[in-house]
Image (cartoon, rainbow, N blue to C red; front, side, top):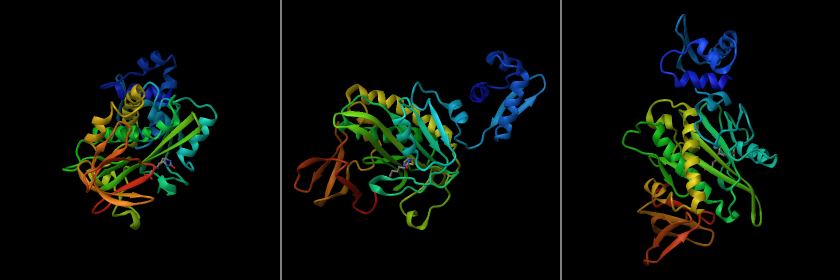
Length: 330
Ligand code: BTN
């Protein structure tokens, strides 16, 4: 009931009376008052005025189930929420939830991770209180070789949502570094790690994990040149639950577009418009060779199309190569 009352307070302009709340949820006015007290103890600023009722004027930067539920406007993405103050890794939590039969769209969110994982076996710095660590469980009925595209679907959704949530980044804008790093001003803001439990021809479930640097004010020395946060880029703090809710909305819509064609056809325009590598010189780092090429954009299956110095064009696959800018990370 806490989430529902929170949602009602949020969606009401001005005051909502204790009587209205108790009638809507079929509970006593004392029960309503107790929930309001709990919300105040949790850090919500709820004004209580005699003969008028309750009015919410401020909320804490928390990602609890109640806070997320009160902001979620989706049908299935992030409807079943697991919140952990501390988790080893939300990807690991979701994998386990998937094995135990949790529904499609289940979302695990943590305030801190003790075993945060990045791509290519790297670790992901996961201090408490300032970042988003979340993973969504998907049960797509597609061939396993199509699952890597879900990473691009999420990249598109995260970039779109961040552009919606933060009104201004000055002259800079959130972009995607192919295939799935979210960047701004040449530095990494967010990363995505997709993992799959599958048989040769059948997907059990897919976990798409997202880590976003939101309100961090500084980074460890070794990351300072390549990592940044929303706070550092836009100059003010941003509520993490709002970002999560917007990402879930964008993801739900984009996932449906992806399933429609089982590829990036309907998302190519949005993805390409945010692609930082488009029309840039890049270094392709493969296991067998490294070369410089001109990046043109992505194809329908999410590969990066590049033109080599001799004019030949080819599609490079994210699982096989990584891409760097000629002068640095981007
Ligand atoms: C990358 O290397 O760019 C991917 C980083 C992905 C980090 C997120 S944080 C939430 C989820 N849980 C993890 O352990 N990793 C992902």
